[in-house]
Structures are given as C-alpha cells and as structure tokens.
Length: 104
Image (cartoon, rainbow, N blue to C red):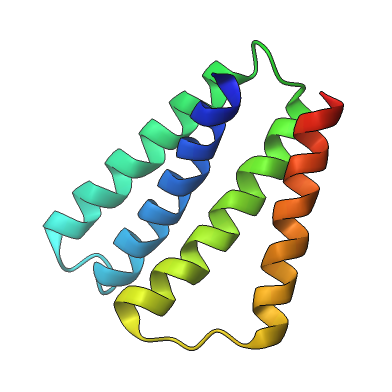
C-alpha cells in the first residue's frame, strides 16, 4: 500500500507544479490554493510512506513519478510535445522504479 501512496504523492507533486504554472506569478488565487493543497498533500503522503520504504528509495521514486507526471500532464493538457527520446527515458524511469520496488 505504501508504494501506491508514494505514486499518488509523486503525481500530486506534478499537480502543484501545474498550479504554480497556471497561477501566472501568483495572480490567480484558485491556482495558488490548488498548488498549496497539492504540495501539502504530496508531502503528507510522502511522509506516510517513510514508515515502510527507505527514505532514499522513496525520494527517488517520488521525484521520478513527479517528473514523469508533469511531462505527461503538459503533453495532454498543454500540448507540449514528447519526443521518442523522452518516451524512452520515461520507460527507463519506470523500469528503475519497478526494480526498486522489487528490491525493497
């Protein structure tokens, strides 16, 4: 269950980055609130996973999921292109996360 929570925390990390981007330098309160809520929930969920997952492993997975999520969100919602090289690297990240899960 901790790995699922960690995945959600990483996805929420991408959520607060989108909120910051859409807030347009903190001029849109709705997006600011969304960013703060996503950031806080991401950190809370991340800290919950530390009871069962080593901090070094959890942090790497949290960052990997967040970085991959923000790229995918930007592609689908903000029409930013994803290259074949980026897709290949996302696959490598996914394989790395799976290997960390197996080794834990």
